[in-house]
Length: 273
Ligand SMILES: [Zn+2]
Image 1 (cartoon, rainbow, N blue to C red):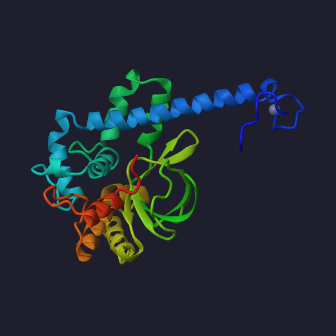
Image 2 (spheres, rainbow, N blue to C red):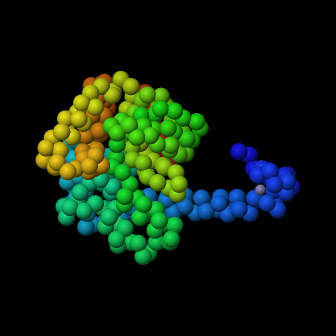
Image 3 (cartoon, protein in one colour):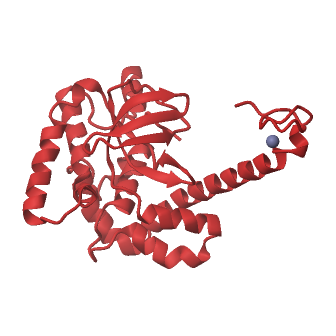
């Protein structure tokens, strides 16, 4: 909806000029939204800094090859591209169980809460309870608003993404995590893209993993399962890329600049922030 001018009649139908009616309220809401957005972006950055603390070095070295199915490990971690690193750290922070059995975001919230502003506290508290990384089908979109359906639970989400749908087509999938920011959902970080012809047997693979997980943990929720196994989505994407004969991740050979490869690399980071 376009905002009326100060001296236009207010949209609410009161007959008053906008400036005498809803203008102040709207401005306050807009300011609040921008504060919450800034708080969310701060927490995204601060979590990254926190995750790189020395005390998590061992966990980092254990988590890397697990997430990347050995493609990256502590020895070549610096070769991750920026979107790859962002996706890895997102999983490492939100889903990965550290050696002490806890998740990094839980430790972050516990230790940092008192240093945060009220808006930042609200984001951190909500994100501790954010869902696990999952697979989402794009079912509709309009501008920066995406309609996503959880590929496993069927749950529908209306999601705000500044970059819009990128090149993702209806019916195609993205690997991502949804986090609440004020009253809307956003992607927690750069999403990975699974084109239609690379979806193949992902459902069967995850169903089998879930069955095995439930056999050992009969009371596990779907979220528990996804936290422990969301890296399998990445393994699937890596395998499919390999089957297609293209580099499985966006790492580029700097000595052989190749427009097609660069296009692929960009394609794997459809949701750059
Ligand atoms: Zn009004």
